[in-house]
Image 1: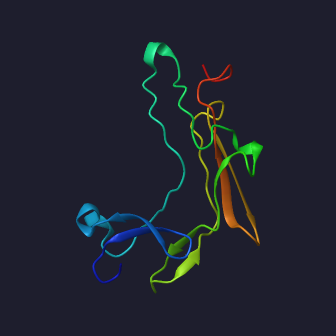
Image 2: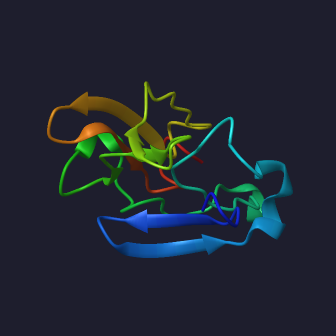
Length: 125
């Protein structure tokens, strides 16, 4: 919101799903240097084991459409307060045996990525 400095998250055309008042992000008064999307879990390693908390749908990125979690047609608001497609995506999976991510681009989906995983599994103790 260029007038009040509030930040909004929308889904689709007119579905507002998140709001952050300007007071929370005083360092983002007029722009952001970086935007991040993805999943996050808390892993306390109780009893020395990785959590069994799933990320996304609980399936790895390679399982793709209808199976993995995904973000598509990712856009940001530019300096003119217009939606613009994001540029190249950088991806990071801290432990790809537990959770992973795969990005790509297409005409229909713009820049997109699949992500997720089951958490604790035989390769992710």
